[in-house]
Image 1 (cartoon, rainbow, N blue to C red):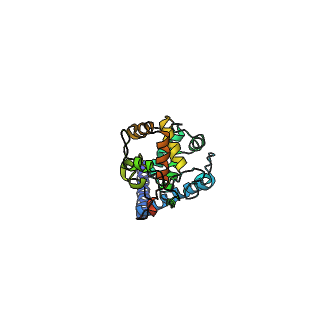
Image 2 (image 1 turned 60 degrees about the vertical axis):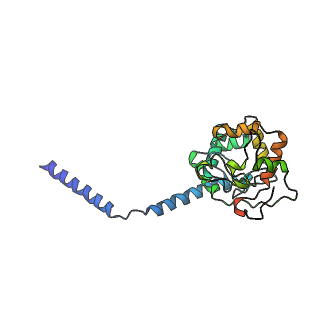
Image 3 (image 1 turned 120 degrees about the vertical axis):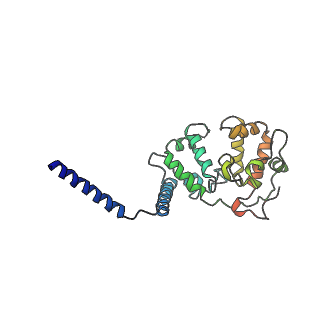
Length: 240
């Protein structure tokens, strides 16, 4: 009898606790999502400005607080690039699949949570405006970008008009390239040509780069460096 009473008392207490808990209003899903997003942005900004606790350097040192890059130093802008693309590149640096000692060291000191936070942060920033160059880019660059040639499809087929991307599911494989420093674009094409960077979806970028001469790489890099980003695209954008 004594055990029966104790058991009944325990069940009553449990039911009382459950009832009390059920009477507490649950946090609205939208509020919970907003809180998680704010925490993720706060984490990203700490790393951007101060580096990671594991020793990764502050992103702002090379890419700027808003990820707008440094054209003269050939540091690419990260602002507005697809989140999936940024995650994939940091992962490639981490496993040494993409050749860049500085970025390899940084990515290796980032957790997957930190990588995701940084990619989300930079993808939401505004790309820098690009001023048309005083000297128009070479006609050869425009020809390759807009028309392609044998064994080399037009670049805009995958990277969109003006190199501003196509968006959607393939954005992680084919990001916007408009307005990136010409030297940076040139280095990436040479890295693909030399097998120092993963060849991309279906090996496409590796195969294309191998069919480009040094002069063609320089010309097409200068063409896309002169193109405005999506934010400032208009009828006044740079012409071929």
